[in-house]
Each structure stands twice: as C-alpha cells, then as structure tokens.
Image 1 (tube, rainbow, N blue to C red):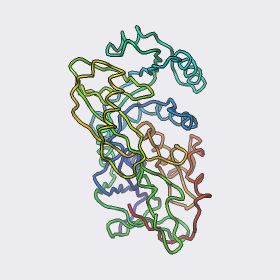
Image 2: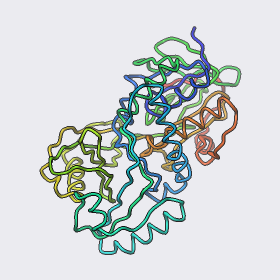
Image 3: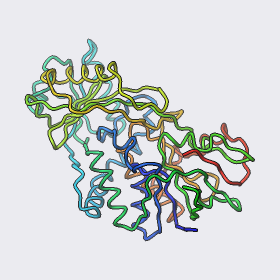
Image 4: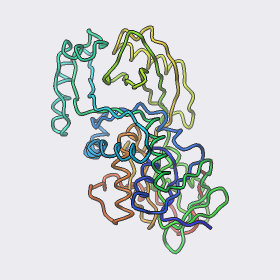
Length: 391
C-alpha cells in the first residue's frame, strides 16, 4: 500500500499547479487523473487573464482574481524554470468593445465600476485603439483599454506545469480513476484508485466539473462530495482561425465574444455557455455564433481559415464562484468550481491549498470560497466511513 503526504485528484491546471506547489515544499505527492492529465477544461480554455467581472455574480471574485493576476509573473517564471518550457505569457492588455446605442453611458458605468474594484481601465478613442490594433472594427461605438490584462497559452501552460510537477518529484498517474475516497477515525485517509488503496495525510479534490458527481450514489451513511462541491458542467465551444489579413496582438472582447492571439499566429475565438451535461460536441449554431462575434470585432476575419474547433466543460457552481479550501473532514480539501477563470486562478488556488496544508492558515482571506458554504444545505448523513466516488 502506497502512502503520500497528499493525493491530488484531477490533473488539470488547478490540480497540477497544486501538486507542483506542494512538491516544492518537499512533500510526497501523487496526482491521479482518470485520463491523460490536462485534457479537459484546461486544454479548452482561451487563456485570457482578466480580473474584470463578467457578471454581477462574479463581483465577489475580483479580489481573488486580482491577487492571482499579481502572482502570475512569478508563477510563470517558476513553472518555466522547473519545466524548461515556455508558456507564452504576455501582458499586452485588452480592449473591451461596446456596440449599442447607449455605449457611451455603459462605458462610463463600467469605468466607474472598474475604478471601485481597483482595476486599471481607461476610455480610449476608436482611432487610438485602431492605431494599436488595426484589425479592430472602425464602426464600434465605444472602447475601454485595460492595460493590466494578460494572456497565456493554456495548452503550453498545462504541459509545462505537469512537467514541472514531475521534475519536482510528483508521481503523475494517468488513466487511474478514483473509485472511493476514504475516511477513517474521523479524518480523510486516502483513496481507492484502480482497485488499489492509496493513503495520504491529505486529499485534494480538484476534478473540475466531475467533482459534483463524485459519491453521487453514496451509501451506508457515506458523505456525498456534492455536499462540498456541487459542480456541474457548462459547455464552451471554441474555434481557432488563421488569417493573412489580421495580425492580432491584443485581446478584443465584447459582450458577444472575444478573440485572443497566439504566438503561432492563430486567433482563438469563443465562446458559448451551455448547460448540456457532459457533452463536449460542437454544434453548427454555436460555432456560427462565435465566428459572427469574431467578425464583428475584426471584419477582416470574415474569410479566415478555421483550423480547429473544440468544446470544453467548465466547472460551474450554484453561485458561480469557486470552491477552495478545507472541509469539516480533516485532511479533505476542495479546489474546483473555477468556472470561466480556472487559468487565471491557478496561482492563488495553488498557494492557498499549499498554505492550508503546510501552515494551517492562509495569507489571503478565502473564506468566501469555502466548501462549507454548501455543506449545511447539502448535509445528508455524516458518518466517517468510506466515501464512494464515480470519478
């Protein structure tokens, strides 16, 4: 029977970042994934690093997002040094585009909101914006320049993070589904994976949208993971294109969609928000909507070549906020529900989990995101026995 200081369940960017951070503390870590690590939501993401809220529900997230963006340069530096791989991190800023008749008033409201949230933003003329990004549609109504925003290539980042974790001593186990989470003597004791019992002082569940289905069929008084991590999948369709007419350098986004440049010349466009369960298919309707939004931002993309289409499953939560931190079962921690911000929030999530495990306290107040906010309404039975899972 193998034993570790921590087991991380889920090998996306959140899980691999946590494993990498814990391994830097000389802890013995195993990372388990039911398939090839990093090929779910992390692989599908666009890579925009923006702390600006995309909805009223996201307002409580802004301080956490700002702190994670602040950590990003050091996070990237550490990953690149440990892995020997580039992740294409670039702090080039972003343009937020408004089209409607009341665009000026909306722009002013957004600028006031951003100022109150400590987000660097300013009004910029269409002419000035097009001087920086010539592909921008000259007929938009108003533009906001967000100088502090950045991008990263999520596929490069997840590959580098997994390599960094491996180089720091993390044991990475692919295609090993967790079937049970174990509780003994009142604390989390490990997992059953591939028919093998693996023990650990701590278990970190970072399985994205699949967390909510863990222990769904709990029996014999076991605790269902939905008590702490009631996640659900939210499909996002994406496409990548190439155009000889558009040399995009900065992110362009509106309420209808966004386009993000890649260092290899591709332009990533997204995305949809669809509650269709665990279905990752693309649809003609979804892709058409994305392409139309991209062309509205940069009309010269109208005859661009579409080189790839895909879809990913974001981990949504009932309040659209992430779930990060310890549960009331000692040794069991949750890191999931990052919804549209998993790439952005990886540095702060890894730091918080590492601090909880290594120090028993955190340098950032993350109580707003505690898994315990769901446990009262989803309490069920609370005996400390084996916790069956379906992951």
